[in-house]
Image 1: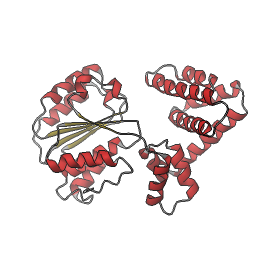
Image 2: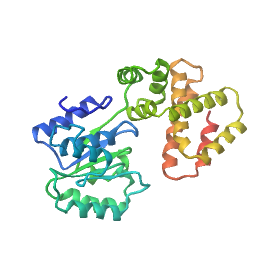
Image 3: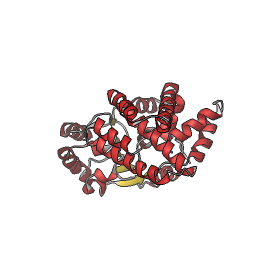
Image 4: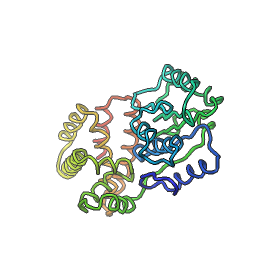
Length: 299
């Protein structure tokens, strides 16, 4: 590829983006869709760097540094909030209509399924008639939650997870000094999500937390009764950040048991379905403790 993306996997998706840029076939709105933590927003941010940098995405110039830091005047990021309200969209529209000094006015919007209905309808108007030189780089973890009218006005690029074998090879290339056991653990815990893998490799404390959760789950799967499991759920609800880790690790363990030919295959398949259902319910703000206790009953 022409540009230094520094991305694990997604070669076909990156090639598509490069082809659009090199052929002059850019569209005003891209929608990067796929599971969370696979690197969609990272790709969007690097695409913004390619479009704004005048030196082939050098990673060193003022423009590249500002985009990486989220401070570039003509590259706006919207991420990290619980929801995107109409006031946020109005600010985007206002900035899009301002005179810029760069090649493009670029708006990076993470997880656009967070838009309220009012915000989505307002955003649709600028997608239909964007100011000249405006590019929207959007990401979503849940394609089905988006308004079809918004999707139809974007060029969709779908992202997927990668295999543990592929991830292990790439991590070995990127981290040649890391221990084999660490890379193997990260590859398994990441569930094929490249962004999650890089986060764990760069943050030993996060990996240690994953390992502790792994051993906790193995312990109560093998030995503990329902009272102990409900007690574990109570601890999870105290620190909601641990819930996603718990669900990821539980998914990994059950998949491993199925692949190993465990006699409880049907039961584990049912539980995997319950985990997916629990994730959906938690996003809808259903009572967290109730959702997790029901999940524990299926183990």
